[in-house]
Length: 273
Ligand SMILES: [Zn+2]
Image (cartoon, rainbow, N blue to C red; front, side, top):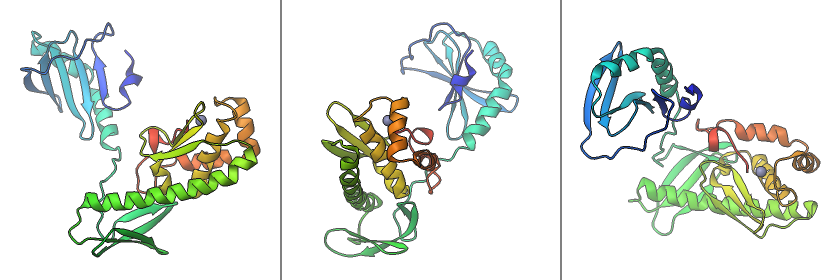
């Protein structure tokens, strides 16, 4: 059994390492709750061939899919034989930090270039406006605005900020490296800080880069531009990085640290593709 595969995301175990069964149809699933030692599990009887166990974040609920005709005895035995493993994974899952959704109210922290700014919401008519002071991010927005509307206004401002910063970094680095990006875009990406389409010469940047110190953005810009010289992360690629940005390994480490708001960046700490 590949226990390592169970470590990521929701833990999942199979009794038999044979073929995986297709997911069962949702219709008429019989559910039974069982207690084994101090573990409570929900058993769902489905059209599956093998017993399958999932430990679900964030509370570590134990869910078991069992073949429709199976009795409870082998299911209890299955849980019993894995009790230590279940407990270990429950405590790992429960100790994970999940991003706390912010409400976009005055006092909330907004992160810009590695610094925390305290949000100040100023009820005002007209188009939303954002202004950054030494320690505060002032958002002027209509009094009745929802959290989502406030988030959108701030996100739009962040995008402008990134467009401007990336534009000037490209202007600085393209001539130094003798390459040219056709265009770039900014979007929220789950798995990567940046990526480069080496055929179209287009580059994508992750919106979350705004939370990191600006040298992290510079590192991603240079990394993606190096891809226009070398597609893969081989020795030649690293040679270019060493030449253009000798400190790149240090900056990469900073990029891979958790964000200041306690959340991790893309892909558990920062893939740059
Ligand atoms: Zn890369």
